[in-house]
Length: 180
Length: 256
View 1 (cartoon, each protein chain N blue to C red):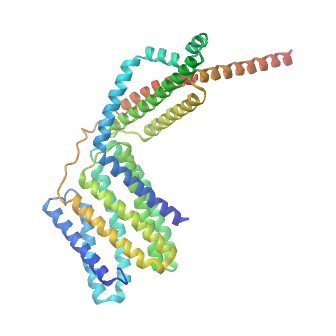
View 2: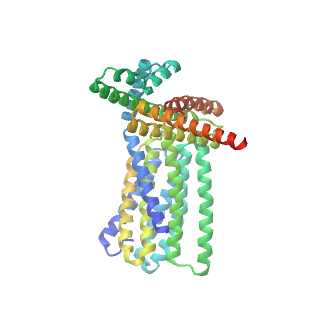
View 3: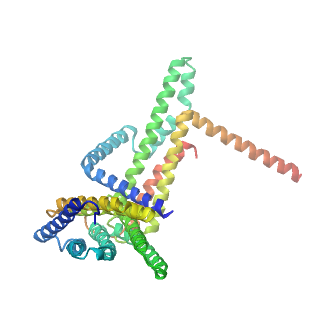
């Protein structure tokens, strides 16, 4: 048992060192990429509007079925397909940007917190858990959008909601009948 | 000692002594002793041991194995000083990250004590070379755990470290990894692999000494981090609120 444990420890150490060395070696290029990334994010933010209301409007538009319904009325299957493809691409790009954003927030936090004398381990763990939760949500969103498309996903959510309401309603009426 | 390869063994031995001497000389010339006292103490100790072992191996060959394992044991404990040095120098300007590291290292320290006491208790009945190998392997294992804790912190908190410290970290990490693999093989297969294990270990050590000599040849500047500050609660609150905003968007998209 200890043999495997020791071999695993050595391998993890080698991997850790390799990651660290590679990171140090390409620190400059990473920094450049980060700058590009942040400028890209700024461009996107400027385009989409970092303002919460604008971002909310863009989001609801991308994930709503409104435009798809309009295009369906035009009776062009090619246009419909194009719209679905474009929407999916846009939605996946949005999800990826959210992941990058979350990563950036954590990176900035680490840079600020590393010099804080009163750093609390519980705070760091709690924050890390929230970050993991966000990453999991993004992962789930990515899978759902890939599988059903943004509008399809919303339809699915609405259908599930309606079914749940029906079940709840049914249960309430059954309970009422039983009580009566 | 590399048995069965007298010329190679002699070369490795002398190369080791020369490189250790060069490292100490450069450390003294470049005033690095004050900067990395524990690391240079370790090198000084190994340097003296290498000369002593050379004398023992040449004039009292039958006693060589016993002396070697006894000194190896001292090396293991001295090696903990190198890990401590990486922690001390690497995180001295980052009190927040140092606080996290301290907790991790304390845990590792208690594990060490526990493991040493356990092996010592087992050995009190019948101490053997295999027991020494086991204890050394366990100690090295704990050193690896401590080094990994530091590596994770350096990576997560993007701690910039100087070229000199990077050299110590890389060299000692490589040495530890190869060492634990060797000790594990020796513990499992015994004397059958001892010659091969010694051979690999010696060459790795020469390589590590080479890395240290190159990267510690001249002093490098420690990257400035900015003044240590208080106000962690403010930082945490700000990050929480930013993460919360992103999360609400994602949850909105999911229809939650």
